[in-house]
Image (cartoon, rainbow, N blue to C red; front, side, top):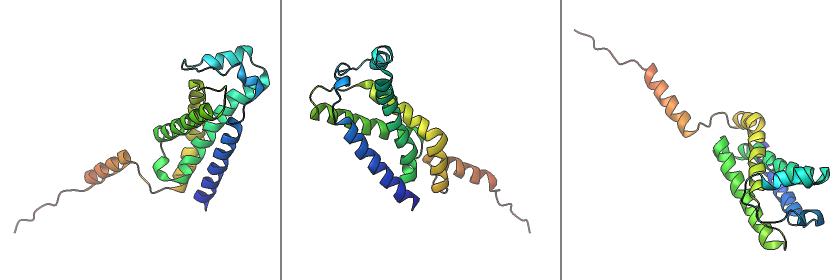
Length: 165
């Protein structure tokens, strides 16, 4: 039930992200140049943007990542782990950026959106996503946890002793 709810919420979040990002805003045209220099547009928004633009652009990207970081581990135990959450977030946000660039005239790919969403994913995963994911999938062990569990089990077993007759 919880996994289904998480999947529905993630689907709704993705549709909302697409709705928001695929509609151009007049204020963001000034900031819509291709950016492959980390933190360049973040500094630009903080220096020249209004509080509303800062909230929508910076906060919105962090919020997108937060939602992914929280919901992905609830959907499947295979998406539990910070690295996995970050990789899936990077792929999804990159796809949104590319789609935005291809669909909307005047927008371009921005590395800062990826950085902010990655930070948001970490913020969503570390305190909440990990905890709820472990509660929802308590018996799922990652590959490294399985190796540790096997080595601990081997250490607990004692070799059988021979009885002399």
